[in-house]
Length: 181
Image (cartoon, rainbow, N blue to C red; front, top):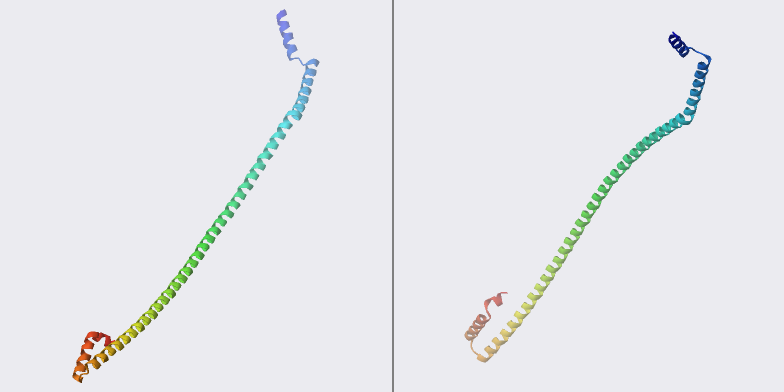
């Protein structure tokens, strides 16, 4: 029975709350509390601070991204407006160039008409001068023919019938067209 008593004593001591067990338990609880405070102060607080800093950084980056996106949208709208204005300016420049081209075309056509009128006027003047020159030459020929005729009349000293025949003959030599013009 000794075994039973030893086992029952060992069991009873194992579950017996004696002063040593209670003091060890209290010291263990105090040690755990201090260990928790130490861990909280040196481990948990820096981790919490790091997490809050990271959360703040992410929040700031999101705000910055939203601001950048808004700025990019405004800049894009500004550039689109500038492109529209550039298109309008280009159209205005082209319209002005067309207008100037039409004005230059009108000036060139007007100048060409004036030059053509001057050329035609000069041609008419030259034609009149040529006509006057030809008329003068015909008059000289008529005088020459009359002189020749007078010389023939004087030489022949013939009657009027002979004179008429000489005039007819001279007219045939000169031609009818000379007398009619």
